[in-house]
Image (cartoon, rainbow, N blue to C red; front, side, top):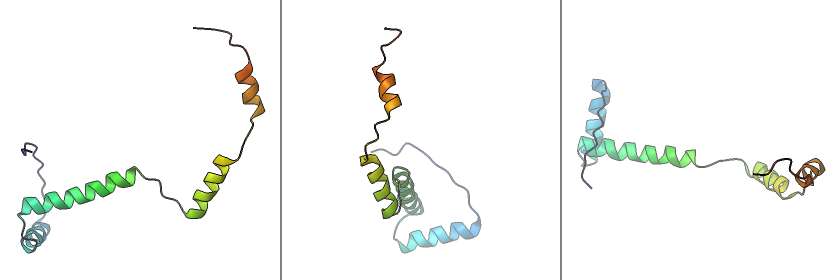
Length: 87
């Protein structure tokens, strides 16, 4: 896939040197290193946004509450009432 999008960043000298050194140790260009690190972090953030984490006991309580029947008689009566308007 052709690379057409450009993202630029500014950093202080110490951070820049650290990134360049890490890229060198990884045998990658600075751009490759930054992109790989950013992609790893972006994937983790997006994956976390799509998950709901909770303790096992809380999950079990939630499933139990979902499985427990709740007849809601007022709602059943309202649903059985004839409509005033039809479309």
